[in-house]
Length: 550
Image (cartoon, rainbow, N blue to C red; front, side):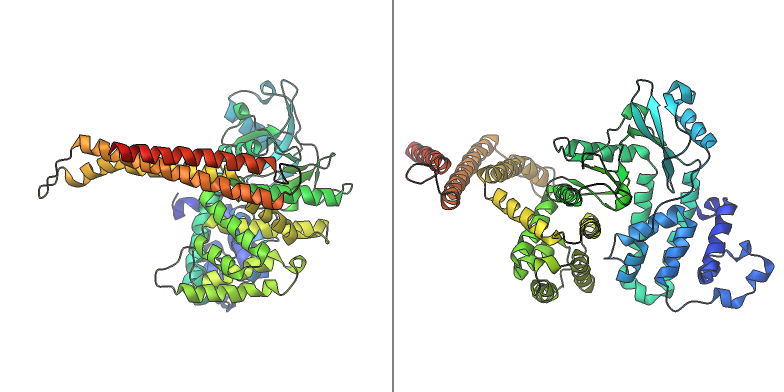
């Protein structure tokens, strides 16, 4: 939708103009060419359209709050990106709550019946007209399916796409004005957040995308009895209506009767599990997105914006926490450099030194005194200085952790937040030393090596055959012989790594698990060592047989 098309919603534009003027942001009204929506007298009030020397974070937040819609969503997203905007703006925008007045039930009924192509009473046995909660994109109602199941039904506001298209277009233009007229903001790359905002908004406007997010969380926590994720009823879910299991609980920021120690522990376990073990995590775990159940379980809500993390990035993140838990500044700096994308001209040694100095302040105090919020800020401050580009999901991850820290301290001020991460990191380190972890890595590497060498003949053919200036004849028999030898070599390397892993595991078990066993050596250590010896004999015999056949 183009700028002129988006501006067909005249009422929305007039609202935007009025609010911008109210908070002394008339400069943007002028640069956007919206003065035509003002009265004759307002247009000639020169002081109203003068450029302000500094964009006041508090006024911007209040303006966004009053405008609602896409402006609130942008503010919330900005609060999650301290790598892209100054700290004071992040803190101010973090106060934004996506809460609005509900829309009339007549429109709820209209949307549902249009989606299902049948009367509301033919789909639901009972449907409460009063919403449980309302936000900028939609609102939630309690209902009962025909089979008696109690459900929460999320219904999108009518014509909300048109409002958001207008908001997106206005905001993108405002960003361009900021970058052009406020040079001090250029280092923060605000245009990148505008693109990200547009992408996230389009996802949030599609309830099918949110349903897929919920399904991933539901499967990830299927074996965790302490965390509750609502079940999605896919047969009733569409782009504009989301039907999920109704969870009976109290919002965390409103709950009064619960065991705070249990809640904080379970909440933190769930957050650490998402970030360090799953491939998806909740990007904004604030109190309004959490419910406390009667049995002290935690329920997560609102999965419109989530972060995704692949295995490679996840291991690098684990390295950060392992280094942090030992207070190893060099390894911590290395871990952050691994995660970030650097320009080839950057002096890595100097960057590493700066990171080490900047993060060094966190080792002069006890772990209990470290503020994750401050830690994140200092890391991203260095990243900006060296133009490091962290993956967007990594920054969301850091902000998610900082939000979780604030929630933990709100519930239980004495909770040792960093200590919890330290213990989890040590467990991860122990897991990495296990045979199963080593074998898993070996298996993945074998697959990678085998695929690479299996592709060699084809790649050679693609490289040489068909070129006018070079013709190469490839003998399939030689290729097969070459591939066979490569397979043997890879298999032997794999055996060697497995044997080494078994021996190391046996040594660790023997060193740290004194007690029952043979001559004080644990039985598991003996078993691992025996398997290593057997595999070693097999490997030596295999090599000798091949030498004898040459």
